[in-house]
Structure formats: C-alpha cells, structure tokens
Length: 393
Ligand SMILES: [Cu+2]
Image 1 (cartoon, rainbow, N blue to C red):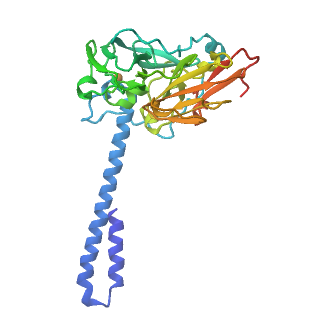
Image 2 (cartoon, rainbow, N blue to C red):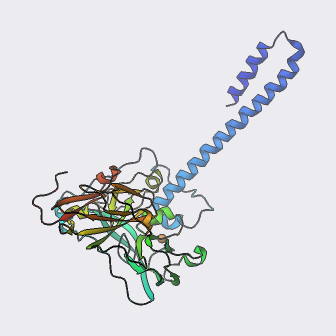
C-alpha cells in the first residue's frame, strides 16, 4: 500500500519539473493525495477484518448455536476458520439408499385444519424440546421443536375475538420465546426469552382474522426459525368464509444443513442460511411427503389451503397445477378474495388462503412455482377421486 502511494507523487513531481513557481502547491496536493490513499488502504484492511470476524461468528454459530445465541458483544476469538472456505457444500436431494421405502413408511404430518375450541378462552400449552426429526427420507436434523412436533409446531385454530392464553415451557437447553404475528402486544413483554426449565404465560385477543405465523423470536432469529421453531395460527373471521369441503394447512420452510443427515443428524449451517442456499425446502417439514401420501378430495368438492411461508427467509409462490384458484385471499386479507388467479406469492412471515374446486379426477400437484423449491422438496399432490397411475412429472 505504501509503495503505491509513494509512486504516484514521484511521477507527479517529475512532471512538474520546470514549473518551479507552483511546485510548493503541488507538494501539498501530493501530500494530501498520499494521505487519502493511505486512509483508503486502512479502511479496506479494517473492512476485510470485519468480514473475517463476521464469518468466524457464523462458523461459531453453526458449530455451537447454544453459545452463539445470546452473546453478541464478544467475538468468538477461538472460532475455527478452517471450515468456512467457499463454496458451501450442498447436500440438496441426498437421501438414504432406501428412500422410497422410507418415504412410504413416514407418517405424513396431518395437514387437516383442526377444529376451533369452544369458549372465549383458548388455552395453549407448548413444551419446547430439542429433538431429532426426519426432514426427507432417511435425512435427520436436530431441531429445537415446539411441543415435540418437530417442525412445524402445532397448528392452532381460533375464531376472531377469542382470547389465546399461551404458556411456553422451555424443555430445551437454551432460552427460547414465542412470537405470534396474530397478536397486537408489546413484544418485549410477551415475546420475552424463557430460560431452560421455566414457563411463561401471556394472553392476547385474536381480534384480526388471518393466517398467521408464530415463531421463536430469540436472537439470532434466523437460527431459531431455521432450527424448526415455527408454526401457524389460523384466525377465522367473525363472518365465515364460504363453505369448503376440505381444509388443509401447509407451512412452507427451508432447511440449511452442515451434513447430509444420513449417517448422523445434521444441524444448522448458519453460513448457508445467510447465503439463502437451502438443502431442502418442505411443506410441513418433510420433503415431498404429500407426493407419497397425497391430500384428498372428491370431484366437484372445494378444497381450501391455508398457506404460511415460515422461511426463515424464502417466499413461497403457491400454485396448483391443472387448475386456477376459485378464490384466493392474498396475505390472508379475509375482507375480499380474488378470482381467476394462477399463482400467489406468500411472503416469508406471511400467510394466504386458497380455494380450488376441481371437477376432473386426477393428481393435481401443489407447489411453490419458484421451481428450485420443487426440486428441493416443496411439492405435494391433491388426489381428486381415485385416478389410476401416478404422477409422471
Ligand atoms: Cu428459539
């Protein structure tokens, strides 16, 4: 750096020989230029160091999330930098050898919308557990799970005006919290961290109808959501939506893994999560589960999908192949619906409602039409009637 800044002044001094009257002025200019170049060089070095430290922190976060969670003031000076060289290794699509048999044996997450509990007060109690789940055939991942569900957590369903009383018991190893998008409440009070072994209860009135995400809001939120800490709360409007014959809930999310999860459970790769390079994307936590175990309807029936995009980062572009939405409530704004719509973006952290009414027997894939998601597992089938054969594409 210093040699570069010295070269330019030397050349300029040579160029100015013979115009002696202005040489003092040029010396000042040259000096200032030299200083400016030096300052830029120092700034560049500082920026590179800061990037290195951020990368080291990411490594420490993925290797030991428990220690990286709540101490943002100190850098992980002992972080191992040897494992962070780019490019990131992808484990996308890697399953156990007997994937078909495992997919058939897997019990699909029940997508059926549960009934609304009776009464004005709905008590919900979730116990957090650290547990290993399967997210694709033979692919295991160590989650932080709401209520032993793996991911997503329990699907909650209330009616507009009901009060939700939420009790969170932390059976995990580090602090966690729960953030309800359906609540209008001071987050520093209600969404506070709950220490391991403790419980915390708060209430809110579900005054706004919609399809809402809930998730752990403990820092770094990216890590807590990526580790499976999310779910859906559906709030029915006081004036009901048109009748549907089947109601299914799909929570879309993505997984970022530090291994293929086959020989040993994978855990979070924070670098991949920041780079938005998922290994798998899923509906209700398991790749392609509704391809192997389709959701069902009869010809002529109306099927309603409540879709939440939990992320942690990516949107879901919801589309049902072979039909057009009979009704779509983008952003789950229940005051009006759209008709004749083909694909609707569900933003990360958002939700929407979709009705399809299919007369013809067949297998109708529902997907995120951002097709990398389909390749990574965010696809299922709506089986209408009893069609022969299987989906060829
Ligand atoms: Cu958490």
